Image (cartoon, rainbow, N blue to C red; front, side, top):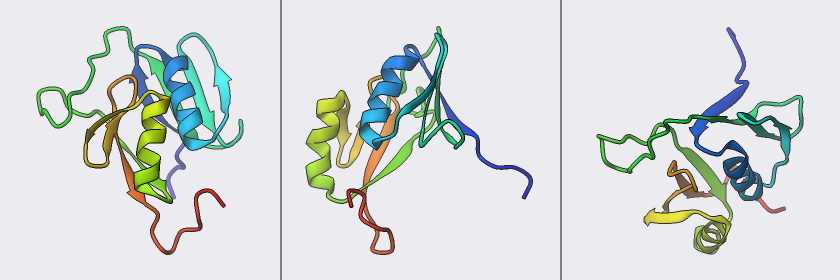
Length: 122
């Protein structure tokens, strides 16, 4: 092993706003916060998602190659149909099928929990 994942850093115009969205979506707390950097993780000693202010952020336009997705997350859920309206209520927008965009325009997919994984909401 050469290294270990620290955070997936996501550029966005408003780090706290986007961190609150993912905190609610994933059920994880905000563990660090400054004006330009906010972290969502299990705790302040684990890897997670980092949201960094990008003043000149260009919103992605999935699936337009001129404005690529920049990153995307696959979010495992117990029930894809039930999760859709819940993420929309948090501020997401449905793009197509199970593809949504977060409030800053980053695409993410809702994926059904595979049989090997324990229930998400156990």
